[in-house]
Length: 96
Image (cartoon, rainbow, N blue to C red; front, side, top):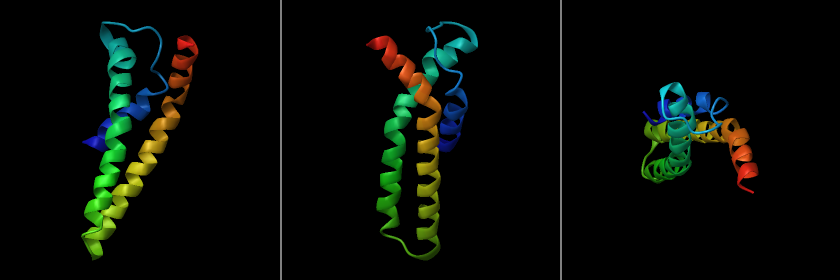
């Protein structure tokens, strides 16, 4: 479920922004998606850390599974940061 949410945020990153709207699809892209983005900025590194902790106690196939999970989540985290970078830059320019 975490991966699905992050993938949706990656898709919505380039189309997010503008003024906050309170109806329709614009509500999703201008209010909900940015809020989830900030939450995922903390949740993904936490999940990566917890996967690393659990990986340290395993061997063999289970260890390889955790390594795969960590690689996928690091890639998704980097992609999420890149797709939301224009939104963050625009937000910072308007704030200062």
